[in-house]
Image 1 (cartoon, rainbow, N blue to C red):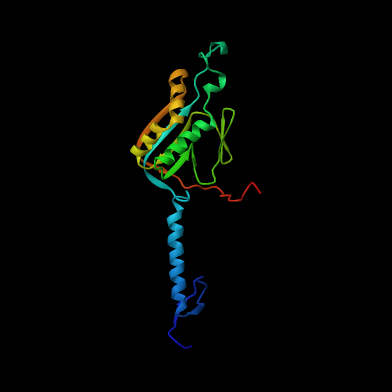
Image 2: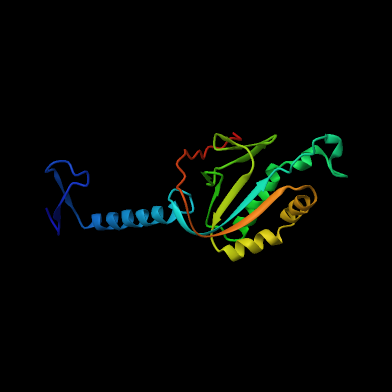
Length: 193
């Protein structure tokens, strides 16, 4: 054994088994430490750890229907009375644009592979079905996220309908909220191939 070597316990921790570590192994340890740091750094934005902090919650709800569908508000149709996918997406996108650090829709943490789909009056999210009211909660700078909601043209249109026919729109500020880690499978396959 030439050079400087030291004996260290086996990384697998099996019994008394040991192996020799040479000078190049310190570089490998440094690389592993760097990789561990990078993994730890990416777990939060990937949604793989719980996150706690100040938050905004936005609730969207269908408008009440008149007893007689002939009595719909002027220049409206039945579809105007329900929350649509684009309404949810407008809120989600505004919150991200406002600096949201983590987000949850209903009881599901949103990750890069999450897909929000509405089929009729039902929200489909990560294999589960939800009925309104829909709640979106985002952790981050509540002032900036609130401004982003106020600056969104799509949300302004939704709020006009909320005022006109009674669609639900409510924003709440929370001092401290914990969003759970995403616990589902992350499918990164390319569905287009």
